[in-house]
Image (cartoon, rainbow, N blue to C red; front, side):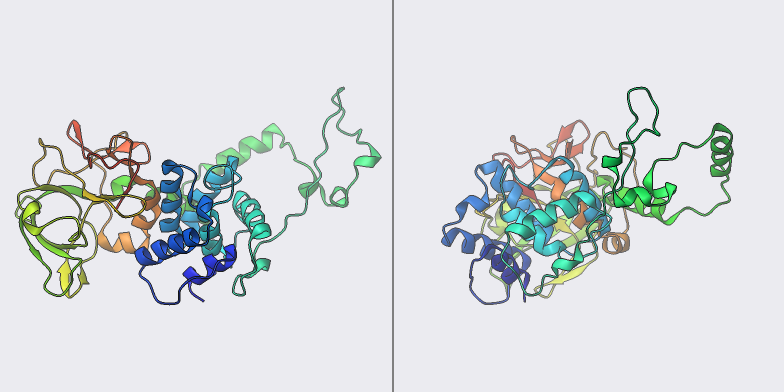
Length: 370
């Protein structure tokens, strides 16, 4: 059963059969929901609709622990992903996280169970993949500070558990100091949990993206695709790249020649429609994909100038193309890549900056950058 079918089944909506790309699949899901008279699931405002679109993109990728850690933080004070009621965002992420081990992410578990309780049954979603947590009894001190006086009525099965699980132990000062001294021993290997945290921090650092200003030297229509333009772009220091972009419906080839564009450079070369593409020209894409506009580098920028993300360090080393794939860096950062109300491109609260100026798609507010 495809993701498309599972999402619609969880809502109780039927949709057309077929195979879709990620972009087409998300559009087909929204169209099916809309045609079923459930437009409320798409968001109650333009901003909410953009958020739903972002979560659809998030849920179309393979979900790894780095994504679950970020999702767990987001859900700390939220019942639903968008606004104050369930939306398509919840259903799509619910399907994407089903059958994963969520037991380490308490906020995700709480949210998952809530969505599961209102969703229609989906045969391939294993509801047993989410574990219940037995409550642990922790004695609360009485007003006179005597923690031994616990009312019998407060007793629970957990109260008979060993002290290590039934109460919070307070270490004596001598042992605490000894433990601290041991912790400073640098010869010890780094714990796996610490290593995982370090990898997550790396994955959510926008400076791992090598984004630079490029100048389009040539542009032509792809001979075999009505959607693609092929560009030859000067990236500075003698680096000239060929890139394919799916923007032919929005730009004529001659419009791009001479333009300063914003290019994601540290991607592995890949074949798009038989054309070897060596990067990605970044655009602002509206929620319904009716508007796609190139991000424009500042007038002051030169070919090869790198985009920075204040307050992140400007001299940070970008990831290699192999690291981008292995650590799924772009997938982890993608939900935060958007334009603000003025069309300025950001990762979360950090603007795309070159020198003292910013990169923007004028007139395309609250859009996805991709």
